[in-house]
Image (cartoon, rainbow, N blue to C red; front, side):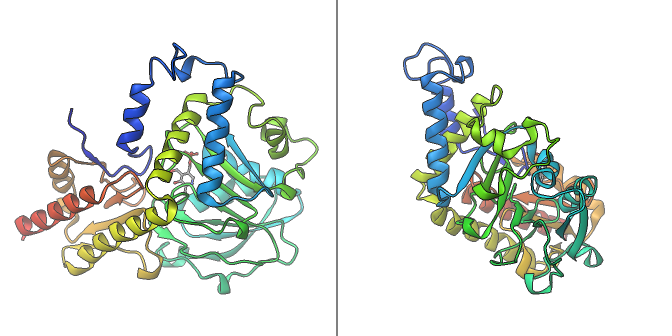
Length: 360
Ligand SMILES: Cc1ncc(COP(=O)(O)O)c(C=O)c1O
């Protein structure tokens, strides 16, 4: 078996011990004579799996009893609409901080459902930075303030979040959740598609302060209503059971690694050395302002873009997969999620050094 170093932005690398455990349990889960995939979601075995996953997730992030944790479907994209449907009336204003492509999509979805104020935007700087909270122009009485914690395509990340904005802070943390500790109490709503640091695609995790669930518009279908999902224990219909189980294995693995503080240390180190190598070279360049550089997604360009294809082919041949930048921005992007090891980053840096020397 050869496993490559996988720098995919998502669906992304999963921890090898998680995959090995899933393989070991694939045909016969805990002596039940069947796979988790084949079990009823109402069975005591699955209820135990689901509850353990939620408890471990809560423990990792220190989530209090005043928050619901929901395991949903529809991706982070559905949350772009569920959030305004549940928290804003048609005539209310929601403030959006715009730092890249995912924010653009969140804003477009919200505009169909409520009034949107762009409280801050880095569009004029080609989305190369994250406007600091002191510069956000907030609307008094706004339904919520939305921020994309980490722009997966542009590689722009907020490394800190404000408290007491006067309105609930709602955050798309798809590509940063679980990469480091987080002060959850600063947020009203957090959502994330699973396919980066949580597990396989097909599951969406929502963390919502209990007092914010229950305000959905009267015509909101139950399947789009946070409170309805909370009251049904995220089992209003058949949930994505196998994904929930795999996410649970990832949470258990994270606890074994020492939790989010240990992951943060590792992730900070991984990103710092890759950015340092890029900055030290005249051949590679990262377009993002230093203070706002993502720990999870490192975009970079080559001095000569005509070498991009050769770079990617040679990287692939060296066992370094999925380094192509998003089609909307081009260049390269190395995604360094929790399951990407330090050895993978070292191998990437060694390859980049060799490629640069060969191209000189
Ligand atoms: C920050 C961010 N938000 C939203 C999405 C969309 O997620 P999904 O495909 O789960 O709807 C992505 C996907 O990569 C993302 O990175």
